[in-house]
Length: 293
Image (cartoon, rainbow, N blue to C red; front, side, top):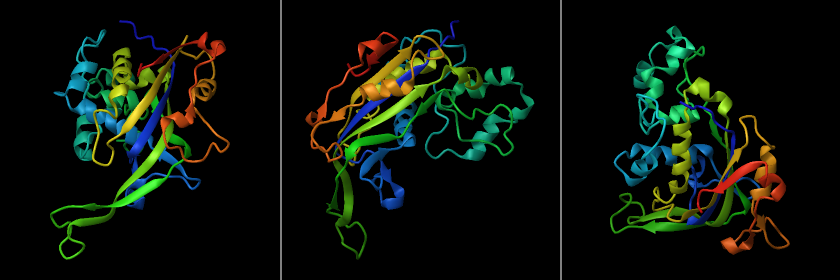
């Protein structure tokens, strides 16, 4: 089986239209915003959507992204370790006393073979003292999604025929509907094959991620997040495992540019941004593909 993996630099261009791409629980679920007015989408929020889709094993997305995979090791499954509401004590029992394993035995364990997200992203179920065998970090890391310009937050009161809270504004949830009017966010991600042997990650796991990315928002819509669009999902493979050019050059080249004299002023639509493409000098060093094309 060929386990060779190439380094990948990725860039998601995400457009939010009258939606809350990532609520902040510390601010009554307001869309996340920095002090300078730029909006944020946390890596945890985005990975949650990928995990949710992979948990729906009977759904069309899971069935599509896992169909026809090649070179899947015997016993490998595509389960989700960090699913909602899981009990950490139960997971600790499942992991067992990993200190007794050497690395090779651990990578062949049922725990590693079962969980797709642990092999890709690592996990946070760590034991004090750093017991040997725990997957602490994976080969895929998502960066913070940051809007290119400031965003305007619109707040409205939700209404309902039934009382929301007895005796208090029955039928209304004041300022509960909080959305970004418009924003274009840039979220980088990186695939580092150097860590694959420590997490048990295989090329088939990366292939599932590659197939899954375009569906992250279309198939996880909600009342507060009805219109989030991935405009581009740039998947840039380097020519070798070490990398054929710096990541930041690729990210800078594929980041849209805000039109106008004030690049930080809030945008109102996608046409407020200049289209971009990878320069020939960089294009010759990598294989660049837009997964949304």
